[in-house]
Amino acid sequence: QVKLVESGGGLVQPGGSLRLSCTASGFTFSGNSMTWYRQPPGKGREWVATIFTSGTISYADTVKGRFIMSRDDAQNAVYLQMNNLNADDTAVYYCNRPPYATLPNWGQGTQVTVSS
Image (cartoon, rainbow, N blue to C red; front, side, top):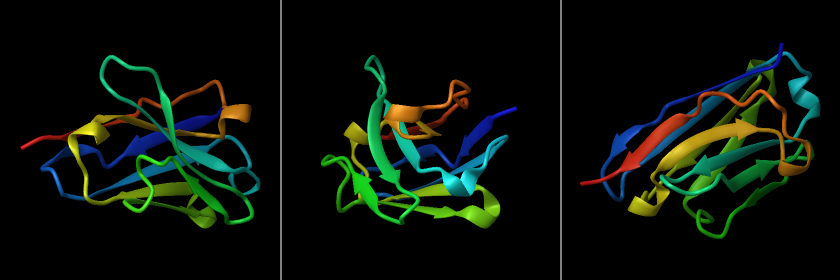
């Protein structure tokens, strides 16, 4: 059974940092590109970053230069290092495959709140 588990969220002040983790099981992780998404309060889910199997990483313009995505295939995990956070980054963060191939079993997400 496919399972995605996100963790690492919390309350952080503007300008602060957090590192999110996502562990996956139930599918061949190393052969898949992976994506971080987020859903701000009252809004739809949006794309944040994708790490392709080639190692190439793409970021949304809103996070470029502040967020760093990485993966550890030995741990079946992806990470999102988030720096210089601002209020617009407040959202529930999820991981999954890229938008063209999302898995139906979304995780519970991890809440990130940026507030002073």
